[in-house]
Image (cartoon, rainbow, N blue to C red; front, side, top):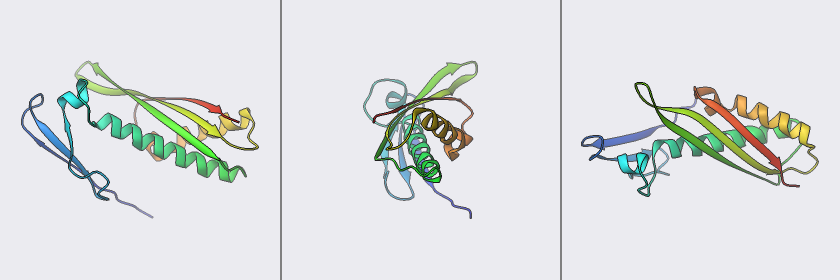
Length: 143
């Protein structure tokens, strides 16, 4: 099975004075503004790194749900935050790391099993596989 998803970026102007819009094929994002100041300064709004973080957190959490089910476990709740690091490196900017923080309520899970399953989800979710960055994880059971 092959699935294709689409997103679109429109940009007008130079890097610092330009403005752009982001849209997704589903319509969830529809001409959402982004700009240099939203990405590199403190102006409120979205940016590619924030969107990548949301995608990674969602992908990882869904992958863990699958892996938990295969182990006979079901989460009451899982909450994942992705902290995406954008750094200036030689030759420009690069996403150098993603740190996932997971808080989970999983009845019947012991910490050793939970840590093993969370690590497998981190390694095997499709977004983790596409990123060429250090991806770290802090996982804690809430029960």
